[in-house]
Image (cartoon, rainbow, N blue to C red; front, side, top):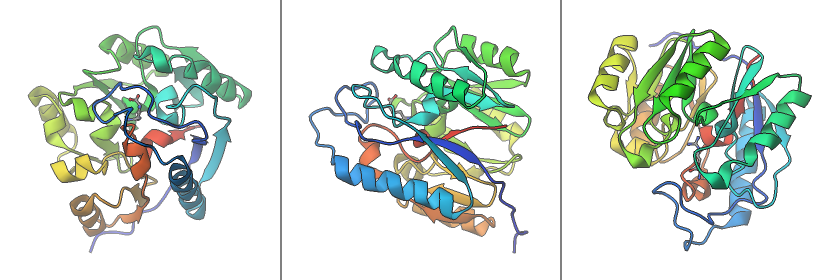
Length: 270
Ligand code: ARG
């Protein structure tokens, strides 16, 4: 049996989906003519916040803003590392106004923020693992922003190229399990990026296409508990085999916007 894995208490920023909707399409999951059940979305989001709190994590929220339906996806607004933040410059014009609201919240929380000069979508594409940041590009965040992140935080940034438009953010194709290991779906990456991942993480948990399509890689791990979409069946089994404790949380309503658990969660790292 695997060793007992220890959780680390996290501070999460979430944004209530009061104005959540799919009113434009900026990724292949989004179909504005498809109905969104706003009340169901709200219940699902409440269940996520409750699951985090039940496992000892601190959940804070910022007020949602009318006219910004994707603002619920807090992960995209910044990367917060070592008590400072790189604020996002969103790729889509429809999302650009979200940045001011998140930056205001962070500044009021005592976190200094610098806005990225190149297109950058926060933790959607910038995933800290141990002493590095894994950084996705191909659809949203640019290699210039990877360089900005490296300079801003003073940690090595490893660029990875995404190739499948359904997995347009790094956090739809990979997540950090702890400071040493990740789970990912290899085919979401260009061959040379796959080679980098294999070299960095020889013991990574490899997900299937079914896991990835169920948003199983859009998960949040505290080092022990993994908050994960219930549809990611194979991945959930493998995580349990490796000694992690899967905590299923269903955010199916948010999949209509191309989002899941991690997308709704910005970690505020001291
Ligand atoms: N509709 C949003 C977008 O396309 C969804 C963002 C999901 N967030 C994420 N971290 N993958 O920008």
